[in-house]
Length: 478
Ligand code: NAD
Image (cartoon, rainbow, N blue to C red; front, side, top):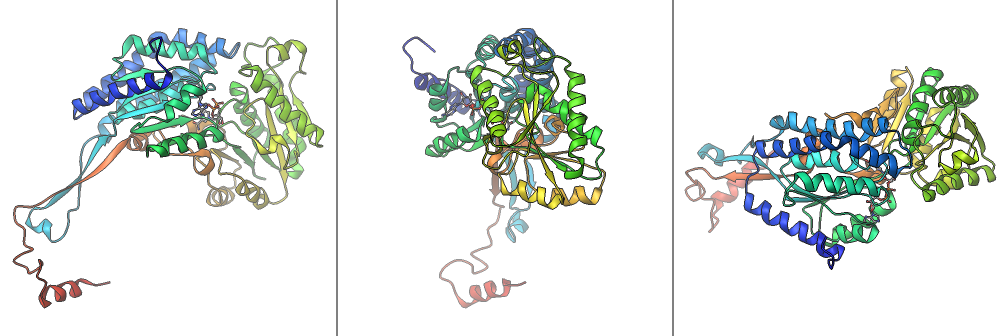
């Protein structure tokens, strides 16, 4: 952005440059798409240390190994899957033509074309992945893109901007950095498609702004992803996998387990098992470099206020792991808090937690737990633990969520051959796999007339006579 430029003019300039180049380019060949994907891969490999250091600093001590796994390797896997499967997705598809014109040579096909220029807005919690995983599908489909990283992870945003500027012609890929003002200006542009990852509240504003220009949106939102532990589940295994998943990024993941539903008689066993597993993973909290701190003071205060509010309203709060200390608090590192029986009107029950706390609820009949889940917004993820196949099928048939993992948590988000996205309040649209490629493509139906048009000789043109009406009547069949 030059000195006198407002966010709006800088973003518009980036969009206009890319749109002009897109229109001038015409067909975007498979080799061009692969080369763009490969260039992102090469840049991420080259800059991976700098990116992980930036993410470490943005969180005040996020483990480099976690950033490597989640953001660097997660992004690389999405980019490589797109590069390696692109040849299976591109190309025209023949379709059945219109009868009886097909008898005279009329044909039809689907031409799968890029939409043009796609805007991508990312989050702080996975500050590289939420930009580059959608970008993999956007580039595979032959589009150009402008990225808007989250201002809550400013070092990573700068590193991404530097990396992209080093490797890419801004007419193909560009980055604009900035806070809510820039983000608002970003969503007001006439993109050919807009991808937003973030909270439900901001997602609503993004969709409204996009509607002004009739821009199609992919909304990757969050919500309260539930876990259902069936009576057939091995409690220890479930507790271990849930604790391990919840500990990732200290619960600051869109698919983190938020509420766990446990059979009433197994609650104590479950709580004890989570505490034991968690304490084994993190014997200490303060100074423990394996624990990702809460990203900033605002989010730390938010999560702590949810826990305090639930406690004040009569919920039982059980600490998993070491006790909080002044040192840990100063580092924004807290043990996992299990909040048992939070009232429905408490803050924690009404909002996505997105931090080091997890609600536990009990049920007598699994149908009651499913009814409670269905009474809320449709979640991004739903998890079922158990060996009862009939119950598993019943749960899946009677719920709807963006994705599902069975006998584990989070893992479905790592599927690169299947779409990732939400439904209802957890969002719309998806990236990853062939479905992600199609999300950012326009499916253009093409009809090509045959060499001979029989309509005149068959009496199908005005002035209509009785023959034509008879012909039409004869065609009204079951
Ligand atoms: P957020 O909604 O606060 O911010 C996300 C992005 O929106 C940022 O880049 C920000 O600059 C931008 N923004 C802020 N105000 C805006 C406005 N008025 N108009 C347009 N853009 C605006 O979300 P966050 O705190 O960064 O991320 C946490 C949320 O994201 C959680 O709800 C989490 O579940 C969700 N999330 C979802 C996924 C997914 O794939 N579904 C992945 C990661 C996070």
